[in-house]
Image (cartoon, rainbow, N blue to C red; front, side, top):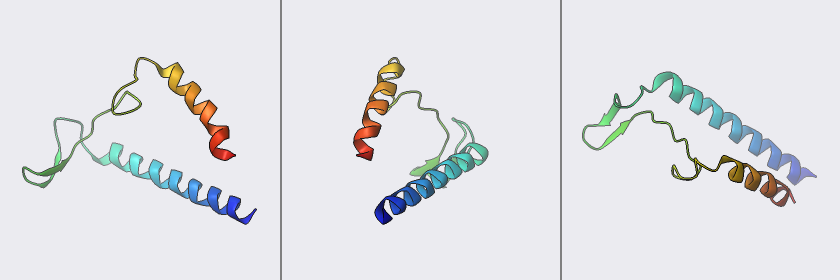
Length: 78
């Protein structure tokens, strides 16, 4: 029982940090092609939207990915 509580606490904290950082990115990072330059010619931040599932692929089959997620959830939780 203790491991289950720890798992859910870590998962909840991770999800909260993920949503918070996404909020910060959407609030403060400009849309493409404007970017925030960190190291000129090497490293910069810009905001683009990935409408696909895996590396931009699978955007034409959202039902399939939803079904895979629903089927995978009980396996992960088992």
